[in-house]
Each structure stands twice: as structure tokens, then as C-alpha cells.
Image 1 (cartoon, rainbow, N blue to C red):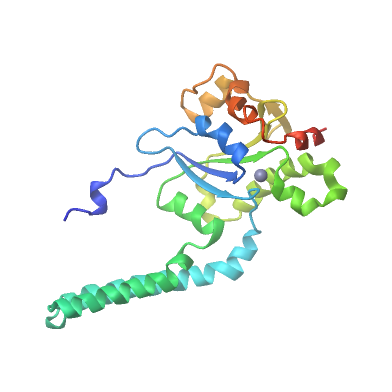
Image 2 (cartoon, rainbow, N blue to C red):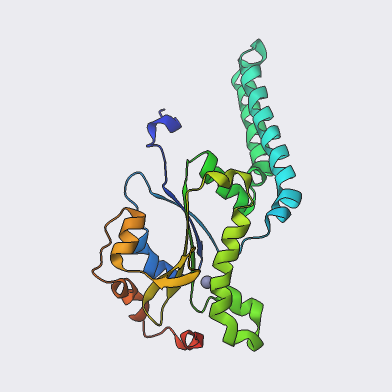
Length: 247
Ligand SMILES: [Zn+2]
């Protein structure tokens, strides 16, 4: 049996991508974040995306992460130790040790990399990520949910603000100091375009294919950014009236 992890190409992604779960967004980004071997992108996805304050992670998640990781490594160490003694030589004892590892991972494996900060820390420290793209989009349902009907005029401004806030929060993670580039992108379905936040002028600027290609270091399968939106608009069963809220 040869299933050692060393037989798999190493994953050294260049970008951590934080993006919304919205299916319309995936139609645009599948050609944008088209992976080449062995994978350029480490994608972290949730509705929004919404990132909790770093302090929340530090108090509510991080202590349990550290504890869980220590226990899992300990259990693994105990197995190795016992396998090296005469007590670990019978198939029955070996099966029992394996069950112990399964049990520990089943109980605590989910906790060792907890939440969005855990995933981001992993991308930086284990995968060597140095570039971040935070991707939000027009008419995002996550924000509609939070705004309620009285905030619809603010909808897309809140969404853009969220991209910036996410960056600010993620910078709270000490490990994220090694990140070299923070790209904030806003996808507009109605304008069939992508805007990028200019950190110096604080203006959202329309991106060209060349702009995107120079950041990603990838050739896009499109001659214009609008082309990336073809599939979004080709489904007549989808109601895009929500897009009219942008000002
Ligand atoms: Zn969304």
C-alpha cells in the first residue's frame, strides 16, 4: 500500500481567496480562479464572506484550537510509542490504537483548525500563502439578511465596506503580517465588471483583463471582463432585479 502524503504533489498556493458562497459569484470566478497544477488558490468560503472580529477568535476559538491540537498530537505520539514496545505487536493491540486515534480525531479534529482564522493561519503557516484576495459581490444575500428591508439603499455600499472590514480583521491575526498583498475585489453583475479597492486613493477602480492577469499571473480565458459574466446572464430562470439597488 502506497498512500503516503509524500506521493502527492505539494500544495503551495499563491493566494488565499475569501469569497461568498453565492452561486452567481462562482459562475464568474470559475474562470478567474482557474487552477493550474498543483493549485494556485486556497479558497475560504462562507456567506458574505463574513469574518468575526479577531478578538472573538482569540477568546472563543484559539484556546480550544491549541488544546485540541495538543491532545491530537499526544494521542498520535502515544500510538507510536506503544507500537514500538512489545505491547503494540499484536494485530488486536494495533487495531485498538488505531481506534483511539480515530476517536480523538472524530471528537476534536474539527476544533484544531477552528473557523475562518484557523483556516487562514493554516494557509499562511502550512501552505506559505503571501497574497490575499477578498471577493464580495453586488446584491449579496448575506448582507440583505442583515440589513432588512429598510437598508436596501445602502446594500452595495455595506458590501464594499465589508470587504475592507474583513481585511482589517484578518490583519489582526499575528501570522498575517507576512502577507504582502491585500486585494479587495467587488463583482458587479449588473455592470458586468470587477472593481478593485485602491488602498492609496481609497477609490474602487474598474479592473481590466490585463489588471486581473497581472495580479493572478494567469492568462484569463476572456478578451473582456464582461465575458466572464456570460453564464450568469444566460439563465432565464434567475431573477436579477435585485441588482438595481446599486447607486
Ligand atoms: Zn453573497
